[in-house]
Length: 239
Image (cartoon, one colour):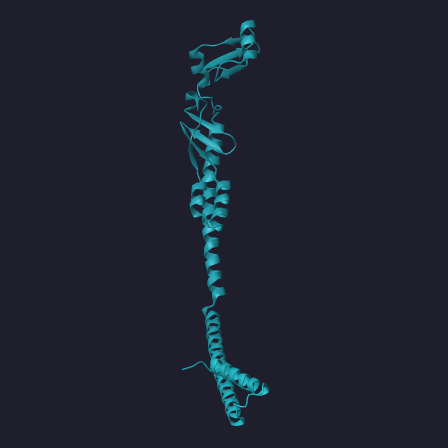
């Protein structure tokens, strides 16, 4: 079946051609033939308009049906009580955050208590090589850590707050990795040489002495100590 728009266009073209022939003096186109062409054109135009009207009606019907479905989904959202569900989830999240902070506070409290107990028992400062045997291999490190042997336990409040921020950003794995209450103790590397100045200050060297130090060694302003002295320095027995 020919498209109504194409049929109307073809009929319009045929009428225009017939009128042009008449205007040019062609007697072969009769008035009756021209009327038939015009009637055909009007019929084709009406048919095309009818198709357009039907298509528009169907489009409007589909539009209303689609909007009706949108409205039904809106009503479903209203009945779902999304706000109430989100509020409950927020309360659960707040409870979880409070639990995490409480656990961190309990851990930090134990660290603080142990640091205070060590201080009451006159714990000695950390030696370059780690905790001293004369303090049962216990030491306090900086302001928030306590050490035993080669393990250091630190406060985690700041770590936990950083981790909570990462959780809110969606990076749970990074948040989990952020909290490190226990770490292996980093101790001073054994120096290659240990020098003592005239004032008694100890100077550990981890590479060959520079030109200035060589000059001081030659003048006697620096004195190189032995390997046994390095061992004693690492243990905190030489100062």
